[in-house]
Image (cartoon, rainbow, N blue to C red):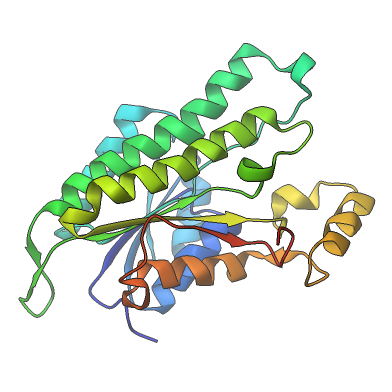
Length: 251
């Protein structure tokens, strides 16, 4: 598979889980990939494993996020694909939520996404040439939403609100940027087998598996394959969509 040869991709939060699987999928499709992580050692490890380039980033820092996007575009002659995967989940019942948890969740999940999209849109709108000297303009942006952002979950009000905002950002940005040849979509994973879900009690995971039409949890690479599709030319007429990758958890 080489459909993304010559494309430059940035994946935020690419050191583990869905982010790492996405880096692998884009690399397998031939893209040049830069990944970010909060921890330099983890980012370097992921880069060594995948053949990507690593940068550190605190995704809740609006200015730093924009600067990383600009750095990648400057160093690689442009930017073709952005995957905004960096995010956090602060769980807690409404009566127990702290102000600092609300602020941090919205900073990372929403403000960070806006900063990345803003900077990527500027880079993607610029004319550039591919490896063969052909002119290229536009690009694909994929955001990570969640089924929780649409249907909610007890104990995840702030996280759900942030992911609902991400889905709305994808739709609105798609309308605004389509004229520049920039597609913006989101994926909304269900319960995916990652380090995060590994900490959940077995009975909770069993209930989630039973609730999905496919009768099992999802795998990170199954989400990554959908992201790779949205990033590529097979989805060239797809924009403004929030695509559920949840095994039929919501039908």
